[in-house]
Image (cartoon, rainbow, N blue to C red):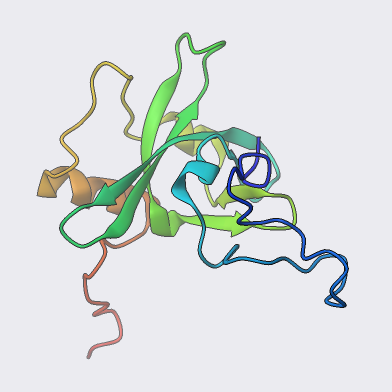
Length: 150
């Protein structure tokens, strides 16, 4: 299911016959999107392999920014499913295919730090946060990029 299918409030509805063209939309999407419409969106890698789908979106209530998308991978009918907190910056929205893209192959994802629905990690733990961002090659929100400083 994609964000257009879950659009209960018309965020992504086509503009219709207003001269803007068949692909034009009204509303804020895709630059601003409703969090609920993203739950259930599929996640693929750059090789077009399906990796899973978005189960939850985690907001940092201190900053008001999206920190992670909780993604499922593996299992069958919810049994044996593994969950992953993927840094929001690691995901790219593919509006053409109406899904997210995560630049990781299946083997790497299988060995990624994950958890099951009954044992969530302490996502506020700084060491956990650093580990997740290091795994996906991202930085926590607000951390300065010092790679170009000499």
